[in-house]
Image 1 (spheres, rainbow, N blue to C red):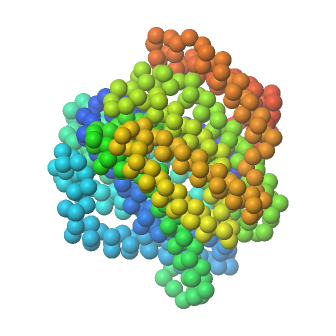
Image 2: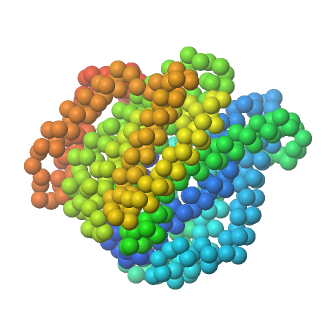
Length: 497
């Protein structure tokens, strides 16, 4: 658990740096780019991510969970065949999907508001390129995460890509480049990220490909395809749950692309709650999955419980930090088609539930019950789709936010119950209750403090109070033995890692 926790700390630091860059990116882009163009720039990676999760066909998940089933020394050639299958299948599916995309562009584009069609037609080629790069990046990230290299993956995704995009927005804002160059650069950044990830993966000894397909038996291929197929459906459903709101806002909200900036601003702030989850889930999932393959069931339960608590502590801290600064976000960001403070409050509540039970996906994916993950997500996706159609037309972005948060709540509560009944794994403990009390003890007095006129200054001193109060109570009440052990070791050795 020590290696996993240290890697989680590294990744968390990188992810926080990425979050800071993302905050600057939102502030700069919201003030330097017109709403319609900004809506396009925000929507392009969303659509690319949706398509890439569909076309990856679950192979990135298979690569992550199957990689350690083949020993590097005894089964190196068979492992190389697994890598070839997991990388080639998504690329071949992309080629097949690109054909109808180019043949039926007019059909697809009719969904959007008429005032947005000309802009979308001008950059139709960018969408498939962005999707292709995203597909390969997913596979490379899965390979590196399986080797507990999440800090490297996080640096590329959170720092390199966001930092490069920030430069592009600044260049556009100061009229150094036009929107056409901006869009091409936006896509090119992902191509560079792909190249860097490939270089990092190539340094590992088992990153090699083999086309000797006969080395794997028909039974193994059936298992791989079945596992990948259900995870493809599950990943697609899960991603649609995360992105369906923005896509339906385009057609159902009368503001069209102009509704996207304020909603994605609020959604981005809400995702800050997930920073610890995104940072810690990779090392934790790799450790739990490896223990499960080795049939170390006691270690599985111990790692599951401890990792879940550590993620919850850090996620609740982010929740309290954001909650106490919602008024500052409303003051700093430009007012668009909606109140960002209200939207964010709704969405961070759903995010906190998602983070506190996030290891349920890991438990289901590594077990024989992985198919149920798809059934649950697909059923909720249908309910979510219906709810969006009912609530977006009358309530706009607020209706989308309520459906978003409600879906996360229902989805995770159902999965928590299922994992407990089937696998006797529980993400909550006495430490979870202690952590909740710590969050309340910090949030209530900070929220009652008077606001400063300068929103930036108010955010700084208020955030410092939250950080000091939360950290102090965690060290005093000790809800997690991993945190206490890490602090003691850091003080003893005088180094973070």
